[in-house]
Length: 153
Image (tube, rainbow, N blue to C red; front, side, top):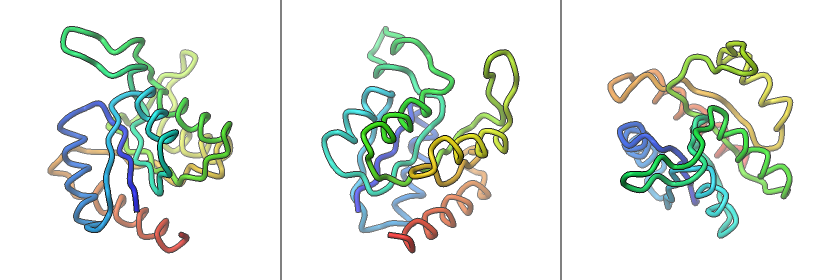
């Protein structure tokens, strides 16, 4: 099983990676830190599971660079790409934001999950609030989501 983790925040990425290796010890992992890197990764090889941050920069951030335009919904761009190219890949969104600003309005995670389920029914599975490395709730939710996905595969 190949798992792609797309996240640009190093402490969060490290926490997710540790948790994922506990849940799926035999899995192979790949990493992307931007929308473009995630898209390149899914073009290169079959991804069995994508753990996706909703807020990703457009490009990878090099020292002294910004990584392009920040995208509050960079994860949505990745989901759209999967749909457009009919790539079958279950996606679990893990975000440290409790709400997002969309067209001047705050969208909470419940509303965002409903929207993503309608707009991306073939790939989107769940959205999980990341409460930090010491928070155990997100880990339990992620483990449960992975168990459901693995049973379906």
